Structure formats: structure tokens, C-alpha cells
Image 1: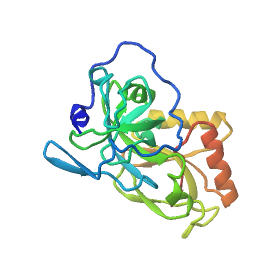
Image 2: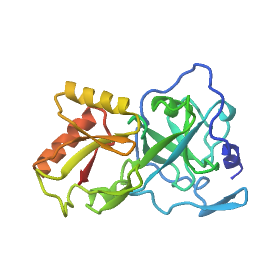
Image 3: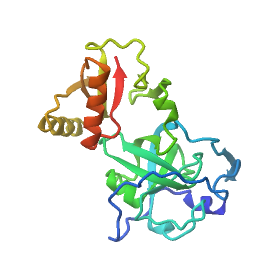
Image 4: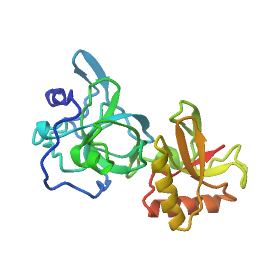
Length: 261
């Protein structure tokens, strides 16, 4: 895991302009690499365990990014790191993996291919390439609070089978993220919504709401502590829920999710 030791620092100096990728990584079925997936590995005296499966994985935490200092160096999977491609490093996901990373501060998201290990600094959960960090507008700040969700062939089994997952909302309260086929406690027309995002900057929430208004979608906003949530609903039926989520994803809101209030 010598390559992993190079990832102890997340952010690097800003790179000069280059062939920066703008399109998301395209998820495809890939066999796990033997080099990148030992059962466990050790960095700076701490042992980390690699997951047996990526299916259904979701996580929230702090993202950082790495750039010129590591460009061209080998990643943990053996591939050279290219800061201009949509890639990332993670401590426990099986490599390679595809994840959608959403910046919870502005609602922007990107799909990346995870092919490296790290970050090993503080409470950070993922290290993005320069290109990926640039796409979700976090290069200047260096870090951002993000939502990570594994995507791609065979990876969303848990969500599609109707199992119930629990995601931690930004204000620290648990909020259920129900699968489409599992709707206990849901009362159509009363408490079923699709949430587009929860924003710490009210200006970002207003921008998202304005975009939805222009697309003919009538959102509602709610204030909770330091967050402004943008939602659509209440929804009258399962068919309406599916239609709204599909419409939002065609507009680029890939992290839209059902919430039951």
C-alpha cells in the first residue's frame, strides 16, 4: 500500500489549465483488482478493512481533493493518477467502484470512478480528483460536506429491492429514505415528498427553486435551523412519485430522493 501513503494530504496547489474532464464517469461492470483489494491494509499504524461488497453503500462526510503533487503517480489499483479525469480515492470501497458525490453545500453532483485509497487525514471520507472537485465547485474551499452513493451495474440492489435505509440529515436528525416499493407510514397527498436538496446557503436554494419554476415544476421550501430544503409535493400516488423523480433526473438533479414526513 505504498501508493496509499501519498494520499495523506487531500488538497494540492491549483493545477494549470489542461484537458479537464467535464463529463461524469460512465459506470460499467468491472472485475475487482487484486492489487487494490487486500482484506485489510495498514497506513501510519492504523489498519483499514476493505468492504466485501459495495452494493447499497451510502455515506456522508467531508470530501477533499488532490492534484498536481500526485499527478502521474500510481494509484492503489496500479493505474496512474490523472487529476484531469473523474476519479477518486476511498478507504474501504472495493476497487474499482463508481459513486455519485453530491456537494451538500450547493447541490452539485458528479459521478466518479474510485481507483485509489485515501484520504487518511482527519474526518475526510473521500478524495476527489481535481476535475471532479472542480465540477462540484469545491476546489477553492478545498473541502466540502458531501453525500456519497454507489452507482452502476449491480450496486443499487438494496435500494431497488425495497429495503429501508436510514440517512443522516444535515441537522443531525435521522430521516428515512424509503425505497420506491416500501412505503409504510406514507399517506399519499399528505406527507410524501421528493427532496432535491438541503442547502446551508439560502441563495443556492433559491437558484434551484427558480430553475424548477422555469421547468414547470412547483417546489416548496422549508426552513430547519441553518438549512433550506427544496422539495416537490405532497405527491398523490406512486406513479406521480416515479414521474417526478424521473423528470428531476432528466433535469440533472440525480440525487433527488423520496422523503416521508
